Image: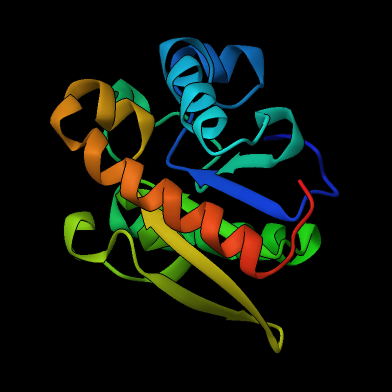
Length: 164
């Protein structure tokens, strides 16, 4: 499951699809998608110009959080997916995406907002971790932190001279 521009320099990785996303085969739909559109619009990016996917491409039973075992099992596919898309920037939204891509199992609040590197097949990908839109809907007081992360993403785009 992935959609958007497969040739984009930006790859957005969320946690898992919701029921709506699972049935539509499109990422970040409904209220979550609306918020995500506003977030990217604020840094002058049209969402259709990025590529988005999920760290785990299935909806866990009961809409539960994936187990660490499931995250680890599917991280193999995610890392291959990243290698195929070959982005210049990776944006990880949520703790499941963070754990799948980086192996970090810490609190997202302690990891978000800092640029890190992911090395796959001898290629280095800069990545940043931030809150997922679904989390921000439940805890809107954290939007201020997401805004700080978005500004860092915009700055990195300018530094790398990425046309988007």
